[in-house]
Amino acid sequence: MQKPLILVTNDDGITAPGLRALVRYMKDLGDVIVVAPDSPQSGMGHAITLDNTLYSKRMTIDQINGADEEYSCSGTPADCVKLALQELLKRKPDICISGINHGSNSSINVIYSGTMSAAIEAGIEGIPSIGFSLLDYSWDADFEPAKESIQKIVSEALKNGIPKGVVFNVNIPKLKKNELKGIKICRQARANWKEKFDKRTNPMGKDYYWLTGEFELLDHGEDTDEWALTNGYVSVVPTQFDLTAHHVIQELNTWDLEVMNNGEG
Image (cartoon, rainbow, N blue to C red; front, side, top):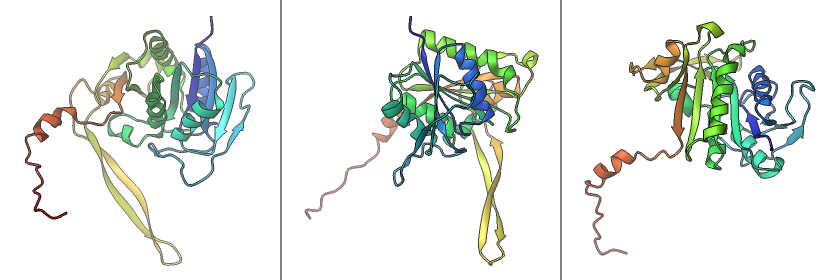
C-alpha cells in the first residue's frame, strides 16, 4: 500500500529546529515533503505575496534525517502551501502538518500565527491539517518530550480524518515527558494583548517604535486551551476558518435595515 504523503511546513524557516524535529517524527508515519519559508515569517498571519516574485529551491538539509524532498520558498507560510499544492507536489498530500512552532499559538495568538495560517491554507483546499506549537521560544528548545503526543494526534487524524472546514491547533506545554499529563480537546480561551509601543528616536532624529505588550487572559474556564496548558496537558482546539458568527444572524434579521428610496436614481 502507498504510504501517506505528509506535507510539512512552518513559519520559522526551513532550517528551524522545530521543523527538523517534525520531519523526523513524520518520517515514522509516511512519505514527507517539506515546503517551507527560506527565512523566518513569524506573525505573518495569512499574508500572501501579490506584488513580488516567488522563488523556490530544492534543498538537502539533512541526508540522514531529512524529508524525501525539501523545497525552500521565498514567500510566506500560506505561499508555501499554495506553491506546494499547485506546482511542487506530484500528488495531493494526505495531510499537512505545520510547525513545530517555537512559541505559543494558543488563544488569540492563532489570529496572528503564520504556523496556523499555513495549516488553514491547506484546510481551505480540503486537506486535513494540523498546526503544532511548543511553548518555548528558544531556538534550542527540546522537542523530544512532544514526540509521542504529536505522532499520536497525526496518526489518529490520518485514521479518522478531520471534518471539512476544520483544522487542529495543537499547543504543547514546555515540560519534560514524564510531566505531560495527556491530551485535552479544548476551546480557544478568550484573551487579548495589552499592547503598547516603545517610542525611540534614531540618530537622524526620526521616531521609530518597538511593539511590546502583555498577554491578558479573560477566560478562566477549565475547558480552554490556556487552562490545559497551565495544567500540564497538550491542548487540541478544532479551529474553523468560516468566520461567520452564525449565532448572530437571527438577531441581525430583526434590525430595521430597510433603505428608503427617495425617488432619486
